Image (cartoon, rainbow, N blue to C red; front, side):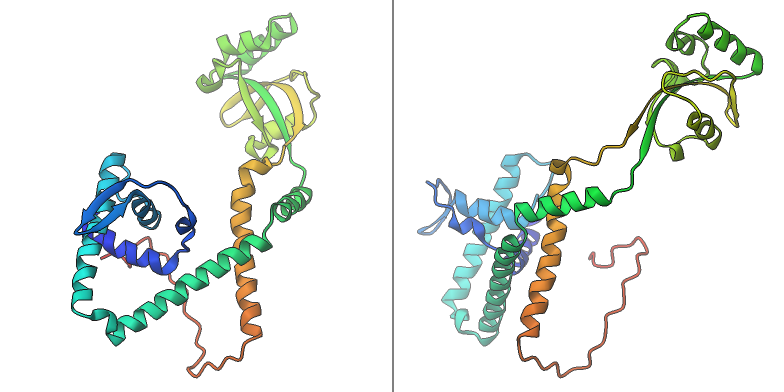
Length: 287
């Protein structure tokens, strides 16, 4: 990422992001000096929060150095602008007013959304989603894949004679992916199984081995149903962050709609909807 790109990212971030990092008070080390002005470690951390990762493959030191270079560049150029009195330029004042509105908007919405989407609200939404989930049964199945009826019958006789299913599968199965695991296919839903196997498994009890092989396009299968279980919903901890983001986005939409409903608004240009962008696999915004 070039200094120009980093500087542009800084300006874009200042427009669109809130500034909670300013609230942190800590002892700072000096990262750079420009004239009499010190650029502190907290300045670097604050700028980095807008830039993202300049180069994921670079070392942390290199990424930090790039951000410091961007802040030096920013300071040098902004000082030059001040010497020329550009802070009094009407275009600059308009830009600053816009940036201020953007920062206020983000700060307000962040605070309001956080207040609306509490931990209890997220937990309640999770519980409601779990309650609404359909019950999904999973079965743990072992199989021995054979090429012909004679091989399948031999495997069934060995198992009936007391040889463990896993041992016969490890020796006789043609399925290289599962034979090293005693034919274990793991937990699957009926939809994940070939329909012929799903039908056969549906009529079996846990611990039962099929009395005759089941034919599929892959060959003949000797089956063993290890167990049935109900699929557990995802743990709250694994989905709460994504759930919160969705709820906060909905909260932001409602907050804005409520504010607009209570304001006197006149839109004096035609209210024309934007067409949806077609997804053709190309990044049209790239230069």
